[in-house]
Length: 297
Image (cartoon, rainbow, N blue to C red):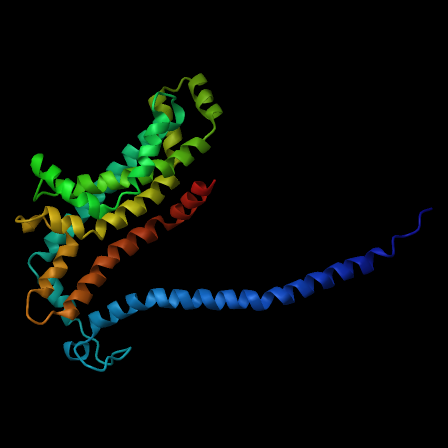
């Protein structure tokens, strides 16, 4: 008859005590890290808070020499001036068209290109991938003038096409590199099994592979949408005379035409510009998180 293992309880108690000591040691550092995180978040959010606050402030408080961090007389006058601008609605629609076209086109082209460079072996494949990576290293400002002459030569100046093509060109390298990891993570055995079951290559591409890499497409779409929606450089450079084709960032210039800038209108217009980005992010944030996790894998 074997004797009971009595000494195990003190060993467990000693291990628990050591764990408790480590937790007490780590707790101050964790508390410090959380405080620093909250401070950084507050610093990042303060400009947004000031923008929204200034949009609701009366004109007298905005021009005051002693600004305050709140207002006791909120007003919608700045928003009324924004929405009564005759061109604001057109600018908003143009921004939606350009951003939507870039998001859809970049997602489809990047998906097909990432599949090609991942599933197929062909000459200069590695060189092509390196060129995609090198394209991300070139500053946008350095390419603006050459792209201006290119848009002029193809007759696309003063049109929405002159905004769609450059943004599409800058979005594709990042999207292809990111989606390449998602396509590579799909086992080739799944493709072989689909072919055995009688599926064609196009059916496998759109009915099996496309849903599996959809989180990655969402993640790249957020990048494409934000960079296109907030663009000012291309809109200012490529839309010269046809102001009816300008995008929403150009609407801010309307409030600088007077001798005294309408800062309330600027802040109200900026607040309206921010809302579609927030709505888009809220709609896709769950898939965005899973997409970023897949990118790490």
